[in-house]
View (cartoon, rainbow, N blue to C red):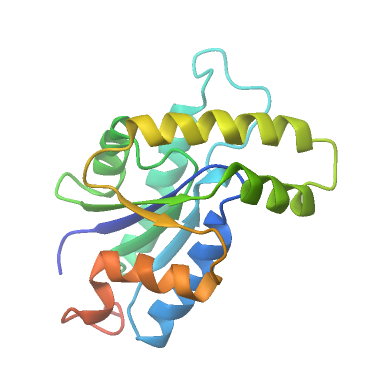
Length: 186
């Protein structure tokens, strides 16, 4: 494979993106599928946002480009990328610029009910951010529901195990069943 492929795992706060991303990686490792994992939350995590980049999009793209260049230099062609809004159409340009114009993009939107997301966030947010996360989670769930592209695979997470969810996500990529090099080139 000479072009890159990216699995975008998106969804509201509390849906389990990071946990599912790591389980997807475990399944791919078990199938000996070469890949890299990036949690997009860390690509633009600066404060304050630069005046010329208020939504941190440029910093995020520059970070993704630099990290991916390192992975690609070592032969990796598949990326698992988790981030709340990553499946939205407007992010496709960032992935094409960072990973190459011919990148294959697989979009997966994890979904959860308000009650499930709240339960998970209450367990996770033990600091001062709970109310902000709850409000943002509900708002972003509505936004994602309305604006996720038609080719986005929606995967419900309510009352399911992480392993079960990850198997469904990996199936959407086709990576575990394709002819592929087990290891990146040396």
